[in-house]
Image 1 (cartoon, helix red, strand yellow):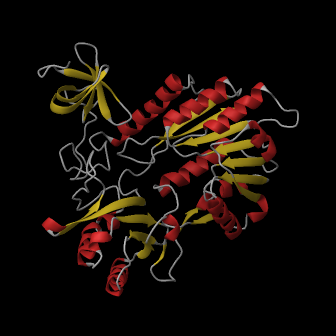
Image 2: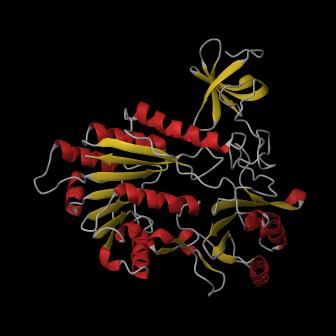
Image 3: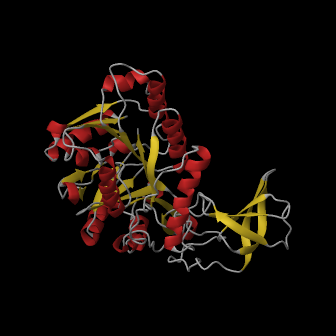
Length: 448
């Protein structure tokens, strides 16, 4: 048990941006707000057999990487915004720690060491977040409206008046949004506003639990005209999203290196950081090294974020996704970009793949794999099974580029690819898609 007067030396930072120390008994102590190299007095909040969780009470020998947070709503106190966890750490140190998290996961979970560590992909650390889901709450007893992220470790909405990871014009819109909702007849039944910024359009999706009055619809139109946004309405699930009024510019982003434009709906999955996504797509294709006479499969293809750029380089691309709706949208995007003749899209549950499925999809020279947080276990396992029991009519891809949003599932899948499926991990590196958060994106390359 950690004593009240025991100074703890912080040795590392975990994936949740907590300092990691050991007390006099050798027990691991996770300390919110503490950084490697610091010495801390703590207050223990939770105790388990093998670890304790504590809050920071006092510091000495402060880390040289500690900085003043850029946002007034960041902190460890009650009511602080929970959207960011690492604003107290220098941005360059955040990237280094994420790279270490990736390497540690590969080593400890997958027993894999990349032959080459890629330089991390990084970019602007403020104003980068072009996708966000903002909670809305009308607090009747205070006659006020809150619009923002949740408080730290709480279901309550933080009292946010600005947000420095959002684009400045969106941050400046938070207080006007609060005033708008407060003036609406439906203010008690508006739980959420979703933000999506394209190259030319800023879209706001209003989730409403009851039909909107004509007066409320006009209030939304007036707000849109004043602030230059496009309102979408969502009465039920994501499939019910529609424009408040028809017309207006299309929501889209571009990948200029490949001459591709990607239209999307504001509730579609797209990366929150378009600048990093542009660099990531370029690096992924350079690492893939697809040739003009080769066939490529893009697993978990989404709307075609990687598929369409690949099609500008390879002979043909098969994009596979779990949703028929997404597949149809991908086809439309391929048609829009003049790449329908080089692409094919199919829907399949990618969490239930078998060796027979891989053989049925046909041989490909290279694969691009971009799964959700759950990873691509079934795909890696099926590839391993085919290595153990080869088919005469099928050969595995020579190179796989794996884009990951979860280093733990990447490490698990990398273990299968290297130790069972016969690949080498030739390179891996971190992608700082979400500065100031503990979220770790990465990219890895596997070769036979």
